[in-house]
Length: 234
Ligand SMILES: Nc1ncnc2c1ncn2[C@@H]1O[C@H](COP(=O)(O)OP(=O)(O)OP(=O)(O)O)[C@@H](O)[C@H]1O
Image (tube, rainbow, N blue to C red; front, side, top):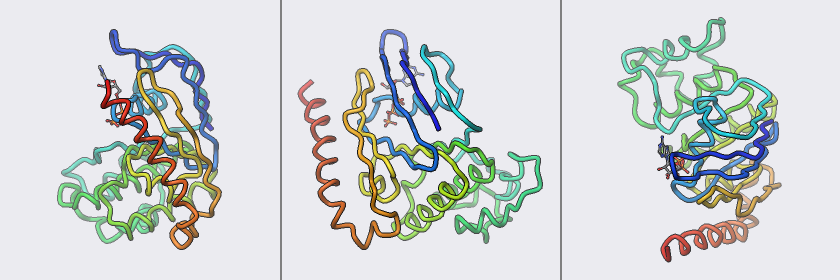
């Protein structure tokens, strides 16, 4: 669970958040969709304590694992060395690599992985780290659809079985509809929630019954386009 209350955040004269409030529930995947520069990464930096320069209150019930936009693996170490580096406990590295379909790369140097493999190893590393809170900044973007679906299935299994709170930044409405339990549409100057949607269709039915989600997809496009047309007229 994450509670963000009455946040004020600025960079010099630019106010990013003013009286900003948002909650993320446990056992749920929340997705943040919104215009570029509205403050999503700034919010993640605050949630992960990388940025402490703000006013207001953030309540978080657990350790945070942060999957960044870029992989942040150590290039000259193997995949399993990259994972073992973040935990002193003896845990099953191969098991977690298997979950994200990169077990065959355990002995490969990180610098020799493809872009999609690096992303999957980064996700595996976050789950290996074992935080109750998982923040994921566009980490699925360069995966093909089939792989994306497998990873989404794995993530959602893990979230519901291990009582985690997951928050994802995405720019892809279809990805948001496939993975999210709740989708927040954000606008900027200062950051605010335009709308939030609960997706109640079970994840495994979302492709087969995607017709049910089409209306919602259209509505979200309209919300985001509303924002874009505002930006264009500025
Ligand atoms: N360290 C910083 N100093 C000054 N301004 C910053 C700093 N970091 C971010 N900003 C500005 O704050 C605003 C919010 O940035 P942020 O990266 O949080 O947006 P975002 O919603 O994650 O954007 P995107 O979707 O493009 O990644 C932007 O206008 C950005 O230029």
